[in-house]
Image (cartoon, rainbow, N blue to C red; front, side):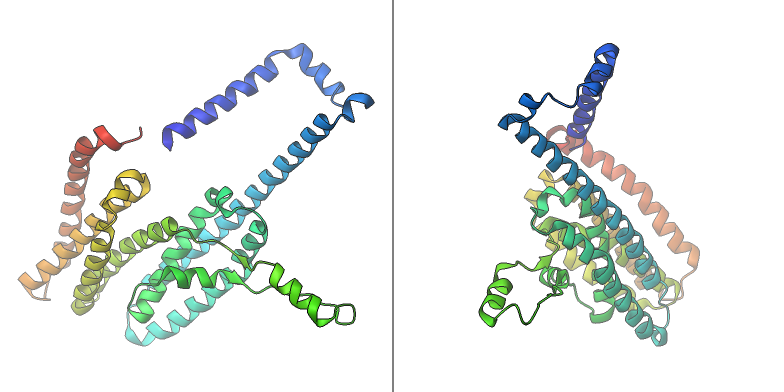
Length: 315
């Protein structure tokens, strides 16, 4: 979408420019923006008034969602950092419980607001406003879920967490039971849609965090965790390989697929070194593994880009 976006904004500038360039009639316009009575009452003009109003409202709503999601992103990042601090088994549970509360808080303060904004709208119209926050949130939730239950979170679970109960306001005397029931069935639940793509991208980000955890766990001398997590990364990566057709189409997926493979390579290199040298391993060796891999990473991405770039890259 890179090219398209630029094109659009360029187009926009062009219009803007042409508006201001006619200095003289710019002023006339502003004074005559109140149309004469007979014109203003014509149905087509009325319709345009309506449309302009609707667009303004939509832009405002979009901005509000973007602001809410900025906060969600920040808090999710903090949660992830917080989870990385777990070193000892003793402090693990208390940290996880604290994180669980913080995730609940994000839902009850921010996501419910987003859900209210999206009520009655097509979520995909506003997806670009909240996709960043959603991916970061999914990354935090899945990381928490993984550390706590040692498994990958299901999309259905993430989705059901983002369905909110309405606070129903009933005036008991005025409504008899039947009309209450009707009200209940008519109103759709308040929810934030979690598209499959966003879920997958969130999980792709999770692999980076797991890789960091693998390297940290070696630092703490916990080599068992290192192998366990590397196996988990294997499974996720093979799952991703099933979407190979999609990764060619979807640019984000493609870049995350590379990153994931490189995270996996780093973890494997680390596990390999442990097996080779035993767990008594000098710290600088790991620094070496990481940096060596990063150099290779740049090379390999360049090479793959050259091959696939010709066909698939949108730039």
